[in-house]
Length: 492
Image (cartoon, rainbow, N blue to C red; front, side):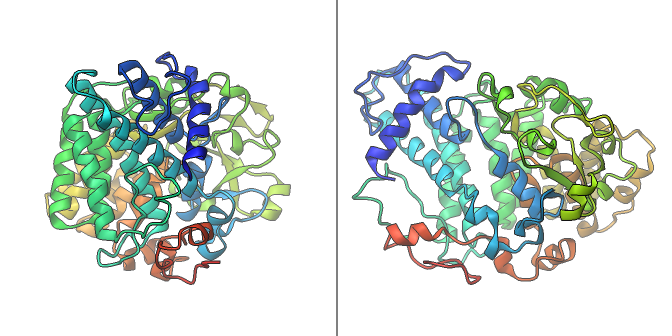
């Protein structure tokens, strides 16, 4: 992206920032984001809001996280498309719609570019203009958002599981212009280091409190635990366990007593939500969240629950509201054995009664406390800790999903007496609890050894199905980029 393009994006962002709850005026009309936009605390906050604006993939009327929520659920085999299967449902990555149509590469780099502009502006600001602690907090928020985007790029468009691979992320720490667009991608090891350096800073300097549609240090701890468990070195697993204990022990968050309430009545007001994406005003009239796309005839497409998801919820109280009955014949013809997907909004398929779309039904979730408990359980298992402690963390999450004490649904957990058996139970609960939420479900699968991945997801047979190809456009505009990812992905 050249500087002119970025300035246009920034100008558009500044015109729509009134959508944020923190009502802030624009910076001076002639201000540019490459350092001169940030002149004082007020303009710095407006610029930081612009980074969040890109994180949310927002327009003046709505944000769109549909791809980030739905496509990973297809990759795990839990979700599908009602008018004919996407290639992603069978992990056919070479033909993936995720690559060809709904590619989020540009969105994540737009967030990185905006974060770099914010950091450049703060660095150029003389001491004393913004109080030092607040300046560090704002830098921490921007670095979190850069780390978040780089981690997404690593997990989808790099050979993330091989620390010796040269095919990592194209790391950018500066505003991208004509003089900087040509740059080589970094190695996988360098990519992890850059992401973790940003998150270490965010943990050390992030705000202790913030509205949960903004970042604080506990969100940084949770994301860092996710990254560390993915890199998977022994010291990483130990540190991830420490971080999850810090988040849980902070007292700032509580597991929602009734999981359904998060999605149907509370949204971002739930004390379980650590980081979410707040809908734009009146977005419920536009309907861009994945919940809207699960209702037939509303937006012209329909995402569905696959039989594997329904089977996983057999006899589970969540089955009564996360999915409905079999989809009708016209959908079954194209996508057999599929069910209505109602996790985010209720729909009575029998009567065709549609629940009203609301700000809550349009909300997306990046980090919830349920995931932190599940990350803790996984870290205990992988660090050689007591399986009983991991079971306690896992059962805590299940209990808040409505599973009563003494239910036979706990028996697979009780009977899991090897680390791998129990780790699989943690994964199954991740699917039940977090499918459709920002690729958390897909990332949980990818953290297993490859032989286990193949067992859990038989449509995956080769390591190159664990990532996608870098978009062809990058090779066309960046002659220094380097090699394409393994797997036969195109470069032209």
